[in-house]
Length: 117
Length: 116
Image 1: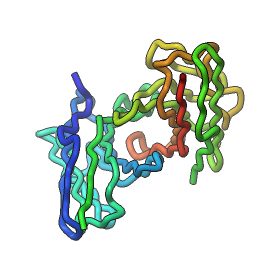
Image 2: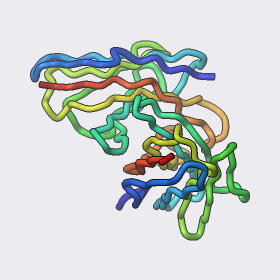
Image 3: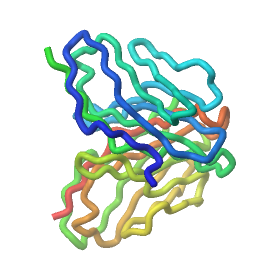
């Protein structure tokens, strides 16, 4: 089974509008972390926001917020007031396996966001 | 904070030739290090990770190998490249200590490999 599922291969949004990128995850761990990264056409991976499984409040970082619904196992990214520079691939990722030392992230397949003027 | 340097940025190699991609870390001691591969238009697949010098764990059986000869150096290699090895390779690192979940994975700029 997929650990991270991003069901939207592509999304369009008008400049200055808000957009929600969906992410659902699958884990049996009680302690895990959820991340969102942005990948512009240059290929670099840019960290956006983090949510811990025990965090009671939804994470926010500037125009980014994470809509964390633990019971539904979803961690959607909300970008408010979209800008042209937000056009990129967006990846949801999860860290689990607290005691293994591995600490790697498992990534979803990504959503390509295009912001239109 | 941690910075990941990765090279070469672009590489075109014939089938059957060897490969060496290098990654070095600045700003952190004893980091966890990772090699990911990204096929065109796809997500990232973890290939190898290392928790210390000489300690390599392979996630996917394949034609590639990894080595960590120094604390801040991580190398991805192949003796004979296959067409299927083409892709975008990303080195990443994370702090070794601290809260389990919150360590951010920092990435290098990536190496784009084309095997012809």
